[in-house]
Image 1: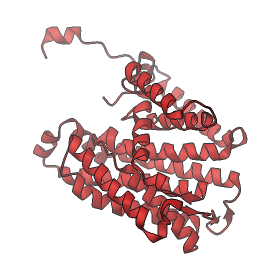
Image 2 (image 1 turned 180 degrees about the vertical axis):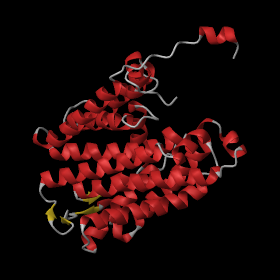
Image 3 (image 1 turned 90 degrees about the vertical axis):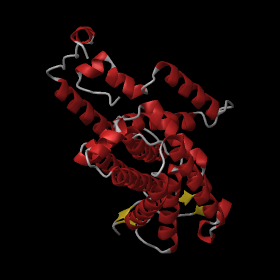
Length: 332
């Protein structure tokens, strides 16, 4: 860049001296709100929101930080839901063991699908993940243990660690909240680790990452498996919340929903997918009894966000003057 071009570049927005304090105070306020939320709102709605927020965060780990658009994440979400529900109902394991089995299954499925999908990029990668996910959907439709279109119903929540009764809505909410915070914490640590920095470099310039000697395929596969495992964590938890697992959890529409949530909130941001999931789940919940189709409302909201907030709601805030002064930096 020439000196003349540099002179016309926009000056960096100075960060407020108290920016770190403001961010910390906002985080504490959010955590405090989550602690009192079940006493103010319907707990089942809140637990659904947290499960899908974790699902969107897991998907964003792959799309936002690695640059791979997957249309097959419903396989991990729904597959873990089936495995967790079956393990708890049929094998009588405790809920935490059931969820861990679901996570292990999602990670294993992610490894198999990832080994096939990461050989391609762009639209070819997306179509391969969609095809593999649909294959898994038809497997779930035919497999005896899934009970086909009836699904697995009447799944007991059981006792956490054999002690805490999860049939209590309050106990179940705080368990789901703990799982959500754990999952988001893993995403944050993953993104801010050296591994995450390499993923970002691959996203920005894969050829340069290869020239530097990095095993790009290995890093891609690692990100894919981690994203699948976290999606499985969300799916297994969701199965216990609603006490059933159905074909809806593995259908391609579920993959579309999580893409919508992530784009609405802002890809490449930690809080963006959470906000996007909150918006979509809230619309689905409060418009479910209306005569107007929820999908049309959601589509209109998506169109407005695409036209006015190209980076997503949180992405645009990060890129705004206030966001920059508070120390936020957009990924793109």
